[in-house]
Length: 251
Length: 190
Image (cartoon, rainbow over all chains, first blue to last red):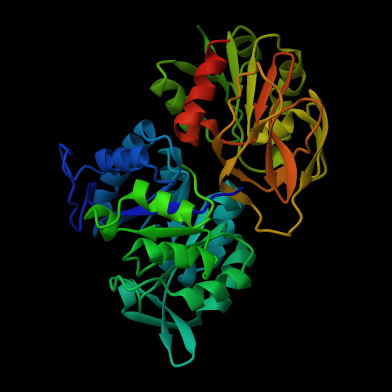
């Protein structure tokens, strides 16, 4: 049976993990390779690296990091952040990334989704969408929530699928950081709208939230950052918990 | 031991060679028929569309050479599909090592079949341990007499097959954690 996936997300700046990580027995908690190896060892099903490096010059550091991760890690990983053209994708995939995630660039030029899918296959294109609820609609935002696009979430997700996206990574800005649970209703609608896997992001606080997002939200995967980095939820315990709730999980 | 990864411009040879390096095996990337024929072990990876991949094999004479190889060969993902007789992807004739037609999953569930899935061993003694593996594919090989591991997604399909010296897996052992590493190390020991 196809397993629901648990995906820790690492924020990367200048080749180092940021936003704080609280782990003992790590020689260097800022080293993405070491943290990635630790998560892979604990049963993470995939990893997402989100590059928030400000400058283009520092991109080389990211490529070097991707190579190191690929040489050490035996599970799939996605790299996102700052990808605006096909050439960026080629470098990341050749450095060893399995998938890339695009967000603003896809909104600005939707054809980029098709270009990547045609050249490298749908399976490596993750379209990341940040959205928040406004009255009775979910609206897509860019630039960390500063830029209102006017795009409606479900219409944009369907369009991304049509253009060749292999997965949707949906972050609810209303839920992100609250630790009060995922955006179940929106996710449930999303998983009925598209026929490609949906990764849920934003709001994870407890193990029960993961159970809810898989059963009620019908998400294919759930992504979280701080609860894993600060050991509020441990992956092995989370997977045991989900299995006891009859959710298909890889152990 | 000489391990050659067939490099024909279709796919993620990099992650396969990195996985072999983690097991202490150095692999050579090559599209040269003589180099491939002289290997102790051959790995035939593949990601992408079947039609351009077959074209790339034909341009290099590999469509003739691969089915004639006598040493253990491991086809991975698209590599496994190309070892079959025909694929519905682009209605493409393939290498014909396995007498099978590769089919597209119906849209009953999400396609591609992406993620970790369980497999069941149909026969003992091959290099394929049953367990969890990482899959990414939209086309599948139906279960058949050469099937060593089955997986279920919409249908039962072949997760692994073997005929003589030809081994093939639909999943990505290089991305399948310790289960995938075990499989690769057992293949290298053949």
